[in-house]
Structures are given as structure tokens and as C-alpha cells.
Image (cartoon, rainbow, N blue to C red; front, side, top):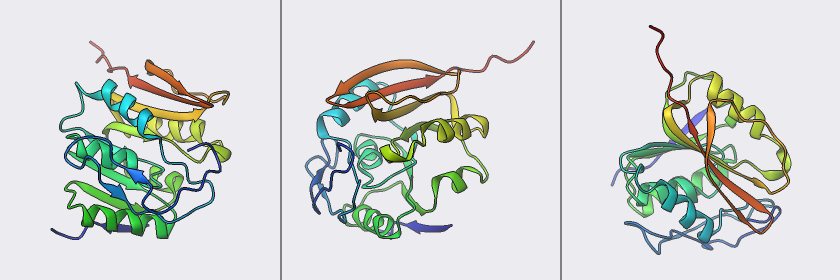
Length: 204
């Protein structure tokens, strides 16, 4: 695992051009992210991000976030732009990870950490709980069930924390029983849903 830290101060198969990803709102509103072209790279569309962060607005300030299959980093950077306290971006493609770190530096974003690693291997390491996890893996890899199980079993998602899951409308996968549906929407063939992890009740 090679951490890439910021220097001080999508239908499936779509191929966005560099600079095509825009931050919708917050401190970085209108900023564009320089993104290498990659087959299958599928940034979450502007209108879906706007819907998601409207759902999260009462909770987002100060949140610790995890953008697990970061890609362009649009979800995590949008969260930081809107007041999240910190975000860890995990991306196995080294060029994408480097572009993401460069974007954080160029935009002077505080609180971002980029880790160049495979998500499954990284989740097997020492866990720390996050308040919000973005789970938007490559659609053709069918990673939702395994990633969600690792997040839950190893303690990556805090009690009362949120998990955002983006998938094809007809995808079939299992999520942990503790993840209760919170909000759901559709954009064409894509389903986007927010879950909240139930708070553990201590035994008396």
C-alpha cells in the first residue's frame, strides 16, 4: 500500500474526457477535476450528487468520509467542499490516484488523504470507523456484497453512520442487516441509495 498525501498548502463503460467532472456546490463550487481517461470510469452525475448531498445536508458538517473506489474522487471532494471534516480516498489505479492527489493540491483542499491500494486488501487492514462511506465500485466487477460485508464485519462504518451505494437498477447483492434503507433514487439505469447503520444498544 502506497499512501499519496496532498502536499501542503457514469453509464457503465463511459469514458469521460479530462476536466469533465465538476464540483456542484460548496466552497469548491464550479471547480473542475482533471481526470485521466479510463475505460469504465463512471463519475457520479452532477444531479445524482446534488440529490445525495441534499439528503445528507443535516449530517455532513465535520463527517469523516471514506471514498472506497474513488476513481475521480468526485464524491469525496464534493463532501469536503460541502463541509465534511475529512475524507480518505482509496484507488488502486496509480495514475488515477496521482491525479486525485494533484487535484486536491491544486484546489487547496484540506482533510483529503489518497491511498493507492486495492480496496479489498485495504479493508483487511486495521479499521477505523467512518461516518460516511461511498460504495460505488466498477459496475462490471460485482463488488457490493463483499465490500459491504468487510465494511460491516471489520468496523469501518460507525454506529449511526451512512453508506451510499450506487449500482445498476437491476443489480442483485446483499447488504448487512444493520444497514437500514434511508433514501433511494434512480437516474436512468442507475440506482443510488443511502443506508444508515443502526446504533448498537449495549447489553445491560
